[in-house]
Length: 304
Image (cartoon, rainbow, N blue to C red; front, side, top):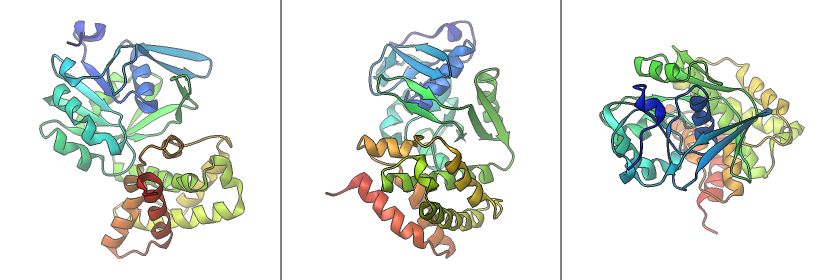
């Protein structure tokens, strides 16, 4: 059975990170730095996690648990950092870790986190998060954090639990009264990043005039759907998003491109397919999505 961390023995909140990939490692390292080392739960056994940020190397002690039956008791807070395609597979961890009052903070892309996760934890509050940091897995198993770490959460009571445990860490937590707008702005960015999968290229491709034009058309199409869903986003947002991609290092990747390069299933539906689905719901034409989405789906799921 899993031992309690030192922080839990001292009476502080029990915390678990499910999915110690790039995002999960970043959060685990932030917690460890402020003395709240979490329990680590994942598919592959590891003795520790490593996060590189600038000149700093943070080592988070493990081990990474691989069997939900190792869990002796529930925790106060779960950071769910698996991909949207892995939620069902992570359900046994949620069952083992969650009590009726356990807060589940979902560190995933998209605008449908609560819909996807809540059925697995019907008695626990689910807090969606917008993740604003570039964390890239490295060949040696470490994670490279290439910028500042920041989360945006809805301004609700359970989110304050997340904000408190990360206070004074290298990960800033903001509470947004209009979380819908923030989440949709990030979704526009994620949707445009899907073009990198189809080109097989990193951020430098947005320096091309033709790619920038296509990306701008796509972002404007996504903007129309976002507004129909209640997001308060101005006409300038698509240009800002394309400008941001053009300002990234030319070798900057994205999680969906990393998954494609590793031939893993892609989060194409929650990042891109959602635009088509909700566009149809609102009667909004989505001509760019109608091309992009089938190609992403085929790249993810085949056949062929």
